[in-house]
Length: 111
Image 1 (cartoon, rainbow, N blue to C red):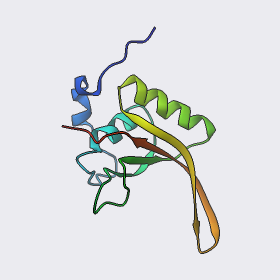
Image 2 (cartoon, rainbow, N blue to C red; image 1 turned 120 degrees about the vertical axis):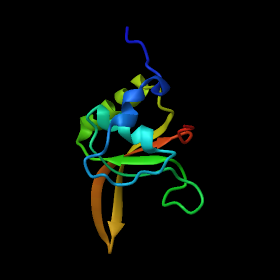
Image 3 (cartoon, rainbow, N blue to C red; image 1 turned 45 degrees about the vertical axis):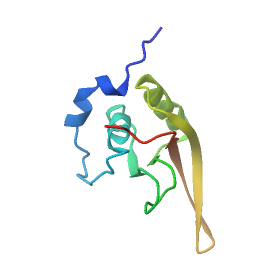
Image 4 (cartoon, rainbow, N blue to C red; image 1 turned 90 degrees about the vertical axis):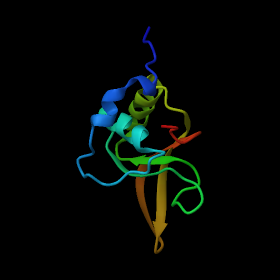
């Protein structure tokens, strides 16, 4: 049986820097870093709320059918508050694009 490791105990995540050095919203930063440390290829994130691109804390990531299971396993092991996991598409100028994965969290990180 695996023991769940709370995200708060994973100080090493604060030392991890994304390969792109893109700024990350404070309320989602450690969630993104946690997923990346588990090998999840994230490409977009937002802490959500008024004035943000998403209404809820959301991380988007690439991958095939098994990547959602992998990312969910990483998130659960680290104690992240996952609310939804979905495979998503968008329609741009009448053309279907995607898919990509979206992981939505119940709350932002309270660091």
